[in-house]
Image (tube, rainbow, N blue to C red; front, side):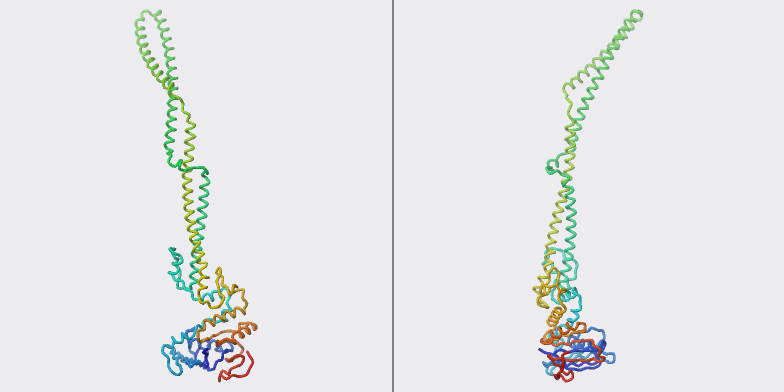
Length: 473
């Protein structure tokens, strides 16, 4: 592997001037503000030109200079003024073209700090792991998954797992609303259909006109009313005829008495009698004729039993109402079936989106071995992150940092002091024999910045690069 063999920093952040020759593991120690992090940021700046701060020039300098030399003959220098940053890359003394492109291909990411990862809560650790997996889900991909479904308004430029999460949430909520509507329709359908007898055939009554039934009933009622009216009419005629006969007899008696008593008025009385009798005879004949016709009607007619028709009309009226109830129930059933189909369709989409993270992660270039996602829970070797020990988390964090480091295999670690002594020892043990070069900051009580470089179990003089005897830190 290539490694940094010389590092010079002038006028950069908290560093006025420093030069040292790094080893495999380089401990940068001192109090807060001594310039520990400034060295890490200087390495990041010279190699990637990333700026974590608005101003990087030391307040006592008018420019910053950073030089990195590698053991493969590559020399990288960056001069920074208030307005510009100038990069020069040489290989064995020859200036290289497209220097930043060359560096980008050689160096990986400086943004992942294993110590920061260990400090985070399990939820954020899971998010960081997923963010390191390069998964993209664009609008076209989502449409291919979901067919003709209308996509919600979400940001497809964000991480693919976040896109899937938002899609899942949208369709989960939509499915919940549809299921709620389905239950309402199901209740309405049950209410309506329970009003209809099991044996009821709506087609038997659907085309029957209730108006015709009422017409038949009304006609029968009118017929019966005519019979009753005729019967009463005949009674009245009979009574009137009897009264007239009685009256006739009284007139005759009176006439005889008057004839005997009033001979002189006989002629006049006879004339009056004959006239009145003739009129009465005519009237009696007319009444008898009406009586005969009425009797003939009665003889030829019978009362109709309207109770059957009334019951039939009442029954048809109830059944006609049931047709409407039945139709409403069927409409609700149709709506319910449509909602059920929509719910099933959304259920398929939700299940598809639920399975997608695991499917995409399994096919992605994973930052650590054994990383999976099940039911939106990030697992490492089938165990949730929250169940891992600090030591296990450190190992996983180092594995991620190693994958992100790039061909140079350079890892910056800021703030190792947050680890307890046991985990710090475990961490140092983990990094001492791998093929990576480490720059590690540690807060101490030292007033001045102190650098200790190690190569295996031995120290390196940071000024000369020579190996010296000493105990491990």
